[in-house]
Length: 197
Image: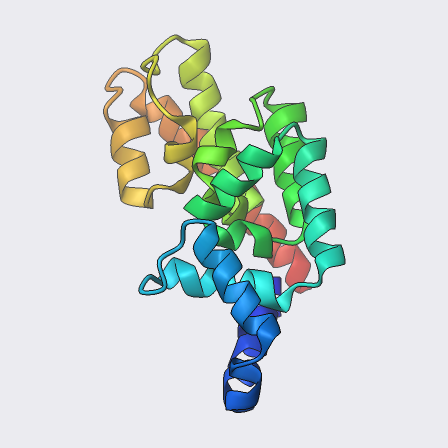
């Protein structure tokens, strides 16, 4: 089960155990802390933020903060990313390091770009980030990507939008881009099948 699933089941147990726990000082403190970070109780992100803060030990939270800092994020970056997508703190340290290592060490991209779209961290490295970044790198190399284009948006948008915005709109290059993208996806699917053997 993922960190997120484990935390969600933990919050469910918390709710089911009764009003004595729900009214506990510790939970009230966490509720206030989450509200203080700018989350509104009526939103779904509030629940995710509460789950992240309540179900994770302080030690693990601090380890994740240190992991982000290792990749160049500041305290402000971490808070901003958490506000935008609280799921990012439910991502395992191994997954954070894998995505950041590919993003920074292999692609040469700035890790702080992910602050604005932290849901990149929840994307599959093999089935989404690697294939899409191959297309983006080609477009950047050829000078075809608009200067203000966000590479993080291209990672997280739907398949349909990605094909429209990053492949099909480049008429002269589209057949090559589609082939490149398909090759990278095939590698990911072949790896998935190997893992099942």
